[in-house]
Image (cartoon, rainbow, N blue to C red; front, side):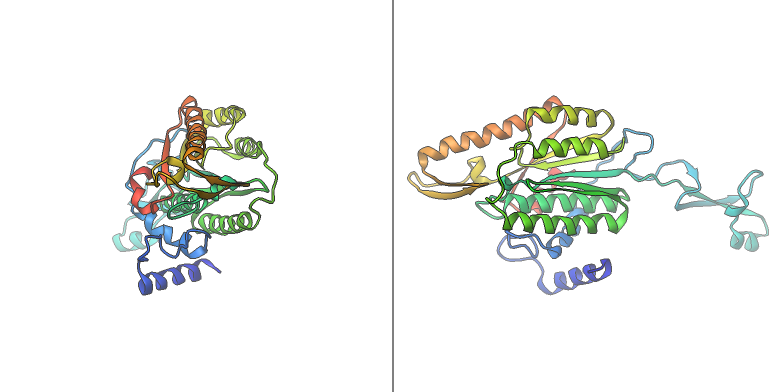
Length: 327
């Protein structure tokens, strides 16, 4: 489906159906990822509060530069001065005023935005509203829409046990549409292969090493993960990335993994955790919960060592209710 057809479909469905009544985000079922629900994230992105930041590298920026030269965005018309490029003469204004005028342009500088999106099998877990992997997809796409709305180039590295999908930074709609397409494909593939792949403790390490090679100086990198597959060996490539790029991290959580669900004193709860089938009781749940917290704390400690700020995103609530964390 092309860009115009996708957006037309989205606009029609928004008008006809509005917001769902079951608490799920628009067009979502909480289990799968579809083009419609990821296109709907455009509306969420528009509501993200603005935050102005200074770029790290000379050719990186979140907005157009103040340098006036031959760029893409028109700035103003002024009287022609000796040495001006004759190709920039505004012949209409010149004919109207009888004096030679030339056009000035604002030089546009697009900043590469890269998403390191962890879709490991451990994220295919959900106790309340959404699978963590679905919330990760909503977050990645919302950040992507926000990037292209600001004129930045968008790319991604989607990492899971079976593959690493590299999407090179592209401008405008090409960047977001390739993200949506790749994300839907990898997510569905992972759903169909749950439990069929052996545990690979190094697939996120290899993703960090690959990201180190492809990220250009001045890029902004968002890490989206549940943190469980980031090992101490990941610090080295991330440290090198941090020298020339800005990095932020989002930790996708679930109410059951946070211990925030109201559970009865006695319960027997079947749980699918990555490749494991568990039955949690009151006693075993406490041990399992401690392990979840330890994995999260290890990831946060790693990010703190890198001086990377980490935000928690809850898969038990729609992303639209957590927009303050996306500034």
